Image (cartoon, rainbow, N blue to C red; front, side, top):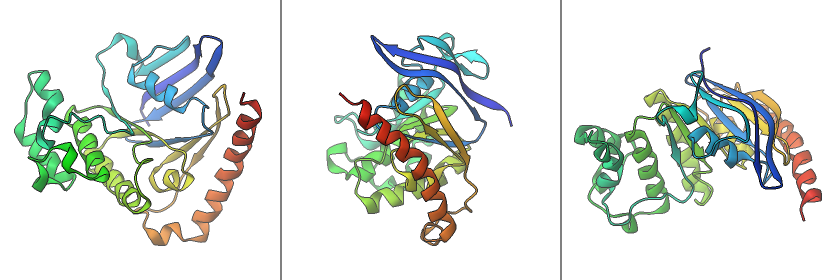
Length: 254
C-alpha cells in the first residue's frame, strides 16, 4: 500500500521535557489508524506534527515523501472542543475555509450538510446545537477544506456515551464515503476497536511506538460485534499493553 503520512525517527522536546523520542510511524492511503496510550505520552504532539502546527526537534514528518513544513497544509484537524465560530451559522461555518481561499462552493456545503445529517439546521448558530451536532459541524467544516488526511484529536471525548457511539459509527461511514485517510487519537480502547484498521499503542513519556496491532474485526462494527468474545479478547490484549504504560506514567508523574 502507498504510504501517505510518515513520522521518521521523530524526537520532540519542549525545554527539558522529551515528549517523543525516536518515534517512527507510517500511515497508508485510505487507512484508519487509531493511536492510544497513557496521558502525556505524546499522542496530541504527534498529531500536531502531522498537521504541521509544529516542527520536530529531530527527524522528519512527511506527506508523500515531502516534508510537511515545506508544503501547503493538506491535513485537516478535528478538535475535541469543536472550535466553531459562534457568530456564523452552521452552513457558514462549514463553508468558511473554502470561502477564505476564494473557493466558495455552496453545493459542496449542501452535500456535506446531507452527509452529516443536519441539513435542517443549516441556518442555526452553534449555541442552538447539542454537543453531538456541533461535532458533526466541526467534522464537515474540516472535510470542506478537502484534506488529504483527516486528523482527529479525541473529538468525542466530551460527549455522552450514547452520542459518542452514534458519532463513532457516523465517522466510520463518512470516512469510507469520502475515501479519506484518518489518524485518530483516543484514550478509549473500545473506540479504537470500533474505528481502526490498525491500532498504535504508545509508550509512556517519552512517547515511542510500543506496539502496532491489525484490527480485523468485521465491518460494520455493530453492537453485536462489540459483544462478541473476539472483541473482548482483543480489548483485553490491548489493555494489557496500555495498562503497563499507564502504571509507568503514574510512577514518573511529579
